[in-house]
Image (cartoon, rainbow, N blue to C red; front, side, top):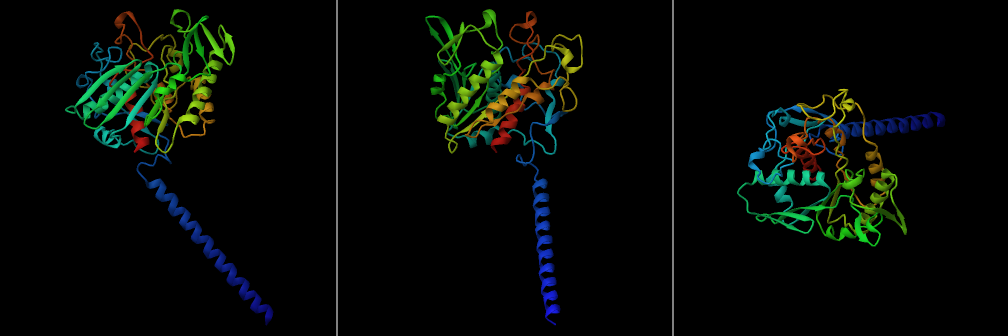
Length: 365
């Protein structure tokens, strides 16, 4: 009798355990389905993995309606005859980007400041954002000015400042008795970045400059001077100095920090399976698919490794792969130097940097 009672109690507990387990599984499946059903869940969707698709509703603005585009980015204004490159939209795998809404952006950042910090690729993205915002509110009052190395475009009706600080290495270049010194562990220029509500950093394109294009005579790290060193090593040391500045000075409760990633160039057709092609000239459409044949640049790996060491939140705008697929997006002979030059590093506006900013917009929604 006692044995039968024990068996019944044991069976009851076993049945209860199975019911609880089934309930937990149902809840888990429901939660997973709900998460996957979200049309725009950036926590479950990688915006940077996808492909370019034809979309006649793009570009996001007409370049003739943005009078602030500099000559080096104004491909249509400089006579580029084809326009098909303008009609592509970036489509991430598994989700869609919310279309950029300039008025919503300005309202979100009312009374706040945004600063791009870096080289001419930062200027490319800065001008893109100015155009995206201006063409959405063309009657808005604005003020454009420059103070030292900082360009400031203010949307007066919203109190929004969109700024650019030209700092090509993110660390300091100073004059000493020996000459111009690139100081890999010095970020005195960071005083301009303090208190900015959203910062978007970038550096890479100047690290391999040599000869007359190199704006320094010696590299200094610690107390030692070097006539030169492995540029990738120098790049990494500078990023660590910048990372230290971020951890020391950023207040995550008040500020957003992004890093632009590596913006690629297209000077070697072998990289995209067109051997013999020596530039981006005449390229009129993106690469299909999601993978660039030559792979990603090593500098991106260095960059990601440094970003992982930062304690404060920094979001990588991982635009490298999606930009690698856009061999058609550069000014080529329709840039600053015209037919005497070949620019396969910068980007036409309207164009690829608008997508960088559209992704930025999606990340801050």
